[in-house]
Image 1: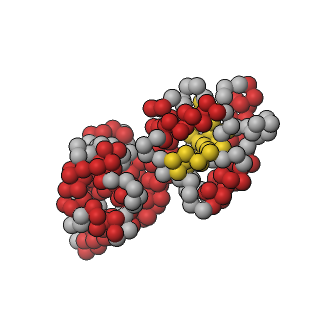
Image 2: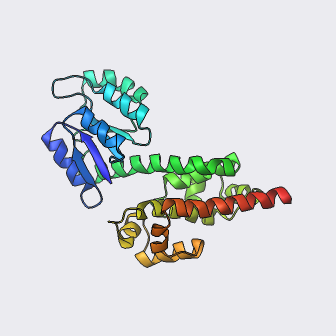
Image 3: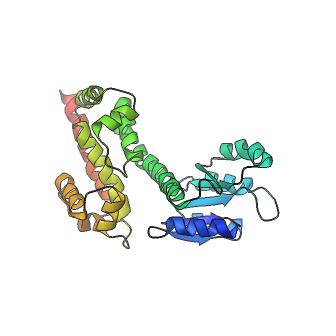
Length: 263
């Protein structure tokens, strides 16, 4: 993962570099055009932008360009609390920033790393969700979206129900009425979609992906992939990663929909 940073303060740059160490690469940009070029060429998966440039000028136009022209790239705003920054915050929010990172508070290693990962997770989850939402009833689509957005950890059915503010049995009934598998099965599929997306990176081992996604071990993840898709993790990589798992899940959803209409 490449994090493009339009950040001027040397301490902040060091903190960003530390936050992505071991799982990503920080590309520090000295000009807005450099960050825009990274996004244009598909090289930046997330952008971190200071609220102002070294001369005190607002970076709002750069943020607007990023969110308008490259909506798949989440933008995190790096800011220092001040009356001026607070006054401008609404305009940056309207421009589409995904996250706010308050310097000297939100930029410690653990918290900053979590913010970066979650920004990418949410944007990636939305892209997958868009391809699945039309295949299921709206009340099931909301569950799928929740599971995708939280797919980097081992969710339980109870956690999903609580996150959607419904009873566990409600999830069971919704899926059953739609002719779909159990909640635990849908949770597993969503987790596999996130796994497959990460497996697309050839420099990332199965063990690394498993660790990042809260699997007990690499073998545990391999077994889940095999059980649901019939493929080995290497075959998932060879057949398109996310597209491969997405195709398998969509096929199951379409099949369930056809059975529902026939009954």
